[in-house]
View 1 (cartoon, rainbow, N blue to C red):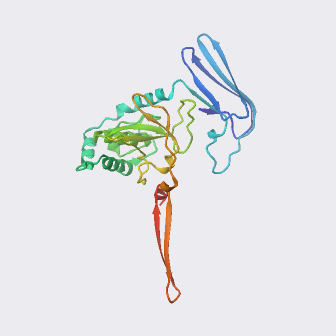
View 2 (cartoon, rainbow, N blue to C red):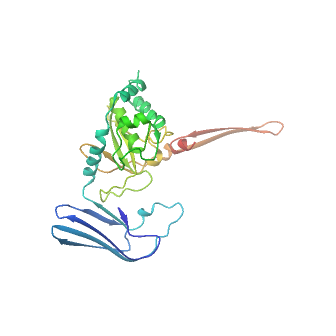
Amino acid sequence: RDGFQREEPILNIRKVMTTRDDVTLDWAVLNDEEGWINSEQEENDNLTKWIWTGKNIPAFVSEPGMVYAYQVIPLLLCSTTDWKGFSKAAWELVEPNMVADSAIKAKVAEITKGLTDEYEKIRRIFFFVAQEVRYLGVPIGDKEGIEPHPAPLTFEQRQGVCKDKATLLATMLKEAGIESWVALSNPIGKVYKEVAASQFMHMITGAKLSNGKVYYLDSTDEFCRDLLPAYTYNKEYLPCLPEGSELKKFPLQTPSENRELIKIRSRIDKQGKLYATINYEVKGIYDEIW
């Protein structure tokens, strides 16, 4: 993913990618309503050279509170796979790290002792990972990008980034008999479905009950009582599955699911003093803010 516009004017810009002839390149230039970007191909010695050029592109002017620049500037996306292939490749990176050791097995048994309700098992395990495993946004080894660290390492150190916590959560849910997997997401930006390029910056966990009900959980959010924060809804996500998955999108929540209701009961006594009781009823994003 790369852009064609900067905060200073561009007289000429040229981007080149070279592939073998047996490689299929899927690409698209988005947000180019002005037609600033041109493309061409050159073939030579079993290689294909893909060239994108632009001239006299004005400066991009940012504004406070606006969306990320890549959502409005001319944007190049390139990929050698489709979404199912991307999903399957991500699963192959994550799955070897979803192995429960004796310590994880013991903790799952402790957390779920006496529970028969699957949803309650999910909630108990979720809140353990969300609140007892610290989100630490610094490297703890040589694995970055999509590939997480092994679940036992994250459990032992009680820390990790989103991919580590999501993988540990999926591992513990599997140990509890809940079908689970991880998913890539971007809760603060946009994922363009036109090309299966890496546009993700977050990883969450999926869980499926025996009755078919599916839940998604963000274990980096220790204050979310709803398992998945409200700001994730209406955003794209990609389940990482052994058979692959198409890009999906969470539905838009209704206003009633994100509501702050303030009830005030007040009275004035005979001396003219005002007494009031304020009661807050909050759901969704307002519950998290409070």
